[in-house]
Amino acid sequence: MRIIRAKDYDDMSRKAANIISAQVIMKPDCVLGLATGGTPVGTYAQLVDWYNKGDIDFSQITSVNLDEYRGLKRDHEQSYWYFMHENLFNKVNVKPENIYVPNGSNMDADAACKEYDEIIEKVGGIDLQLLGIGEDGHIGFNEPADNFELGTHCVDLTESTIEANKRFFNSADEVPRQAYTMGIRTIMQARKVLMVANGKNKAQIIKDAFFGPVTPQVPASILQMHPDFILIGDEEALSLV
Ligand code: F6R
Image (cartoon, rainbow, N blue to C red; front, side, top):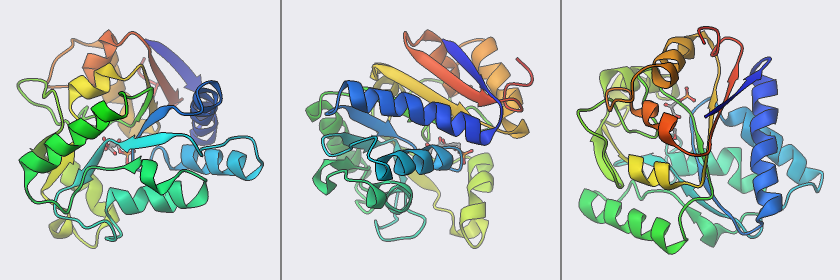
């Protein structure tokens, strides 16, 4: 585990974008595992900026996103499909046929999850997985639980996650109660994992996840065992470690 201290959000975003950019330069046809949420927005903006300057080419990459709300169609403004297109895909030259997000509009959870695992296998696994972290230690939508779920699965979102995500909806009632998420095995099999974290509200969980015991009650803690895990945090997020 490597921890990189960034001065602030912009510095964290630039450092993360640098690592993603290096990955794409070293392996132009790499598979990027991508995340949504507030934290990586600046990272995507930086990548778009470098793309516009001609410094990075996404034409050969494949992307597989971590998760999607169950029951939201792709064109719903709060779907993760929509988020990724708004923040990155519509602004760079990634090929539409190389973009994968779990299919939230398929209400058959078993079929949707199986299909996603098959896609990840077919593309050859993930070269670099970008992650954020929830205040309860979730990664993707892998919430605190009694055991680590392995493959893509359907989860009931916890109250804490619904509360944290309601800022994107008109009210907490509108936040979907379930989501499809990549499992812990898939994330752990990524050849490189890059987590971004910023803000005071992440300080305690960063300490618990990476300086406490490895436990499914803190899903991100498993990353302590990943052979190539990099955490980039701003000063506030790293203030307790
Ligand atoms: C997003 C995801 C989530 C977020 C986490 C942190 O695809 O899977 O695990 O990374 O909820 O969200 P933010 O960045 O909004 O604090």
